[in-house]
Length: 115
Image 1 (cartoon, one colour):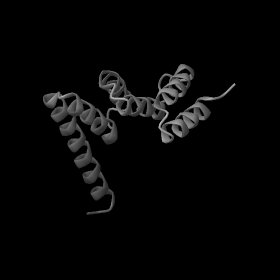
Image 2 (tube, rainbow, N blue to C red):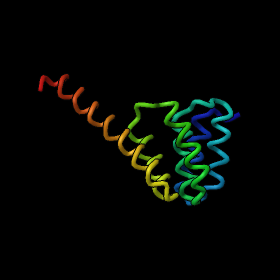
Image 3 (cartoon, rainbow, N blue to C red):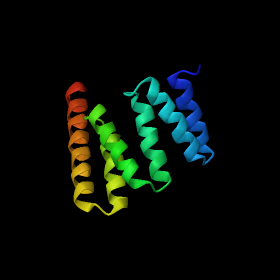
C-alpha cells in the first residue's frame, strides 16, 4: 500500500504531465491517510485552480490557511484564487495577511542577524 508521500509524489508527477484530475485523486488518497498533510492540501488546491475549479480551490485554500496560518504562500495562493474568481475584497484581505507575515519574517531575520 502506498504511503502519503508516495501518493503525493505520484500526484505531482501527474500534475506535471497536465493530468490534474488524476493528480487530485492521488492528493485525496494521501489526505485520506493524513488529513493534515500540508503539502498535499496545497497541491490539491493548486490542481483545482489549474482546472478552473475555483470554488474548490478556495475551499481547500481556506483549509490550508487553517493548517498553516503563518504560511505566506498559503495566503498568497488563496488570494490568487479569490482574485481569479472575481472576489476582490477577499483577495485583498488575503494579500494583506501575506504581506504582514512577510514583514514579520523580515523583521525576525533582521533581529537574528543583528541588524
